[in-house]
Image 1 (cartoon, rainbow, N blue to C red):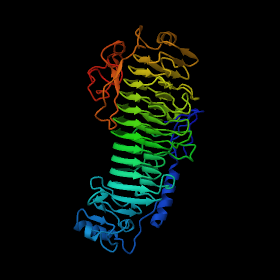
Image 2: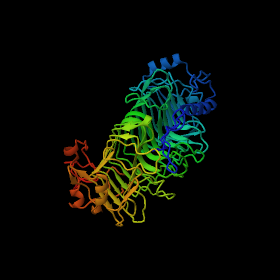
Image 3: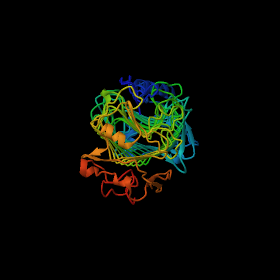
Image 4: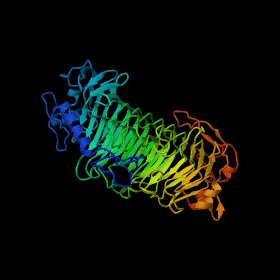
Length: 602
């Protein structure tokens, strides 16, 4: 996520944001484009030993063994889909066009200029040193992608050392699959495992990047997409069924240019689909004390995106920064759906973040639904934007479950923020039908934090928190650093239950010890002159794990009817809320009068 003291962080180029809580978070996006491209240019220049292109990336140049463009065109006419092979037992003097004529090295394979539809296949089970690059003039057709993958039995391994494993620069129409890529170590390699970037001038959208069934580890970032020139970037991107782990800064990353963020439809990445990705043990940079490192999936600069059926865990443990890591989060985005994901046991080495999910700065129309967060050191769910220049609007958080989040050991009133946190410049935020619980009375963290511990003040406008279940073990029910008016944050129809019987709310300068006193003193939990909400025991019982959850974590829901169920409001009928069609278990929401993330009889 990311918070700060109200000043817009210096982004440089593509610096990311995040929060500082003690004294507070920043909300920059992170490192600069110049640094990213400069680093890539440096390492690639060494590896390929060729002249740099105009944007600092190397150009492929002719060599005694390389085919000319004319020869490549002639070969393409003779064979509509040429395939080139590389084997550890191959021969670089061969033509590479059959397994028995395979090349031996990636250096030889990289000399060829690949045309649309051609394939480069590495023999499964073999290990190859070096890198492969596709540059402007290669590939280029989404319907006829250049394929880089494996053949034979098993997957091939690229040991890239301190260079990227695969580079796609200023081109698209590329499919990368069935490969293992290994760097020189998270604290040694300055490179990205799969480095996809577009620095073309003129807001050029390149079409078609597919990455599937790859295992990427021990780089700076596992997979990175960078748009470095206005809205130049990529469309129709897919990253699926892959493991991204043991990298330094991020498992999967996308970044565009710095703020101010472009309007919807003008971001760098369009139709970005992430599914089946496991991002884990990306620990962060212990030497970077300013910007966010150590996230699992961190996507910025995108329109029309989906992150689904993915898992982030064990990330962020080495990040001691003013802008911390998150398991799965987005920023500078529009129309992104985050659903059916699990984010657990993410960490931070400092006082910031370490949470499960985050909708961060300059994001509009995002929907965070039907996800599971548990045992994170920071918030299970956070919605945050740290300055007016990067305000967010129209985001929704619904049918999610948080279990024992906000567990950071350093400072329970600071690092944890709350199992759910809403803060910063947010407008028209809708938070409904979520279940947030602590299982132990030893847990002291806040269940819901509305801008607490931040110096930016309360900037939320016209936002609602309705029909959620909050069950506190031993923690504070709600902490609002500045007491919000009902025009800023309106709370209705929620369950607020304290297992330990220590019901507490910190509401600006006031502290309340009962729902009735809080309702009377604030005007919250009231609708058409009648009291709403309840502090009754919702009777949560385990109801099993969702079929989409690969961790098989049981979740909880109320057993039968009772005061908790009776407290629910009909959000669709009473307020015109779009409540969606499915609950946490993907069961149909027959009516919107329900409480928490699980529909009755789900």
